Length: 156
Image 1 (cartoon, one colour):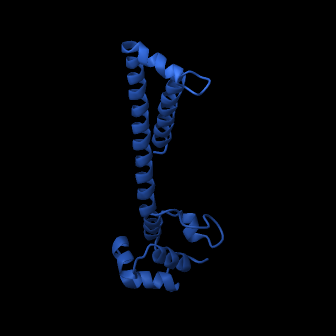
Image 2 (image 1 turned 180 degrees about the vertical axis):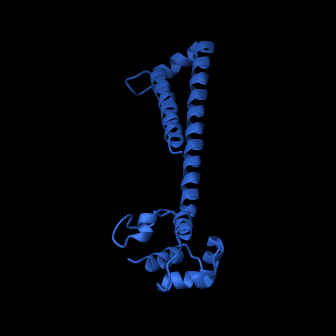
Image 3 (image 1 turned 90 degrees about the vertical axis):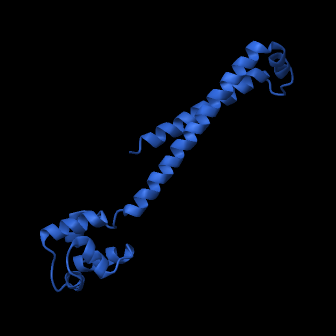
């Protein structure tokens, strides 16, 4: 695919008119029209600006059969990913805090009201006593929350 076709495709995928793209690149609308029709070729500084704006490599723009086969995600996609990562970090934080709070409550209940702790152990239908199940669930919540937090922070 030639530069003219790539430029046209990138502009259309971004939902921009020739006028809007011209404003972004600080050129005339006629320049965009000439580049898209193949009547002229952008100067190197404009090629760099196009590459940066659409987040594609110069290799992709210049070579007809080399480089990337498709444009990289645009700024809108990156914002959506950032929001998803932020949501994941918040969920991880909340789950982690809930697990820690439940562990503290369980510990305090075991120390302050030993009879309740033993009743929980006696009423369990699982082979692990009630205290063990409760401890295991709290620990799982802390681990799941920590994993979500660490996965979210590693994507910067």
